[in-house]
Amino acid sequence: MNIDRRRRALLAALAGAGLWPLGARARPALKGHVAIVGGGFGGAVCAQTLRRFAPQLKITLIEPRAQFYTGPMSNLAVAGGWALDRVRRTPPHVEGIRLVGQRARALETDPLVLHLADGVRLRADRIVVSPGVQMRYAEIDGLTADNSARVPHAWLGDAQVEILRARVAALEDGATVVIAPPAGAYRCPPGPYERAALIAWQLRQRNIRRARILIVDGKDDFTKRAAMQAEWARLYPGVIEWVPRAQGGEVLAVDVQQQQVTLASGEKIRADLISLIPPQQAAGFAQDTGLADGSGWCPVQLSSFESTRAPGVYVIGDASLAEPMPKSAFSAAAQARLTALGVIASLRGEAPPQGLLMNTCFSLMAPDRAVSVSASYRALGGRLNSVSSGVSASDASDAIRAREAALAYAWYAQASAEAFGGPSDA
Ligand SMILES: Cc1cc2nc3c(=O)[nH]c(=O)nc-3n(C[C@H](O)[C@H](O)[C@H](O)COP(=O)(O)OP(=O)(O)OC[C@H]3O[C@@H](n4cnc5c(N)ncnc54)[C@H](O)[C@@H]3O)c2cc1C
Image (tube, rainbow, N blue to C red; front, side):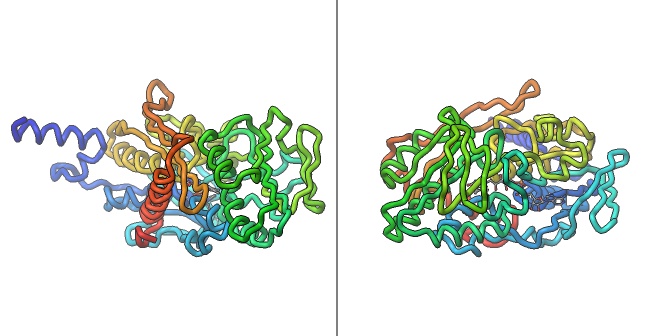
């Protein structure tokens, strides 16, 4: 290829990725205000990407929490394999992103205005929404937002992470632990099963041999099942037991006082520790503003993540309806990057870039062993299609499991640095 053709090919590639206009001198400077609701993985990566590729934009990130625990690696912290401060993060405090420590409360769409809890109104040219999930406590008899800390899900990066960690540390020989994953779509599909493995690892560290970890499930299958079950059998024989929905595993009711769950099978199980992960939906902001539909999640045009219910508003991360992408930090960050480039393109009056979305979910089976599932997705005909995928083999060697664990730590360091700043070797 001669230099001219190579240059044209490069420019075409940059245009495809939405980056071409950014370096071009002939273009007028991009102006506008992008407001982002939620400073977790999706919102923070979106803000950082906008700042990087369109520093002329005014970027406001609205996040009420001064700090939180990340979902990724929180199971390791819950099991005592990491100190809690290794998973504690703050929203990004960087030049070029105006961080507002408030809760967004309402949304007007014509023109686009966000109402904050303190009464401030923010006029924006585009709004990106990444508020995460909320729990549907009422779907389990006996469970409320107030009493759920007694059966901690530790799924929202808040004080329940500390509570669950303390409860795990207090388990004694002969303990029964119940972990209850929900039915339906939820944040981090492999998370409950990783949690079971890491709690088993913690018990073994303390030489607790007579323990039982029961996973009572609202589903009949789970991601990476063959590889995970092979690891449980190899590392913690006889400790972890999985009861699928078809065998009546779904939790219908809980008595937090008695520490007892009632399963669909009618069986009542008392445990020393229950981690009850309730059914989920997009967070309250998405429900209150009508961005979510009857499914509880927010429908979007999958080529751009622009809401189908509110033009100029983009919904990314766990709150969006982006099946078959799993609700993960990896997915949220991939959607955030593509959406940031799409927002820039849209402010220029151009079509959004057509990118490939990737996800990999690592699950630690012990601090030095992991399994993973990966896939890439492309929007076509109003759907997200998986164009490639792979999952860890159930009979992989010890060296491969160790290598996957090293990749999991490397991914976490990079992903949290990209979102929240700080060293990427944290
Ligand atoms: C135990 C566990 C393990 C996990 N492990 C992994 C893993 O290994 N890999 C992986 O990729 N993912 C993992 N995840 C999933 C990951 O944490 C989520 O998918 C990811 O955080 C989603 O990003 P998000 O931006 O959608 O939501 P979040 O990161 O939850 O961010 C949402 C933010 O929005 C804020 N917010 C909510 N409402 C408002 C409002 N009205 N106004 C302003 N701000 C608001 C919230 O305070 C919150 O900080 C795990 C999750 C859990 C629970």
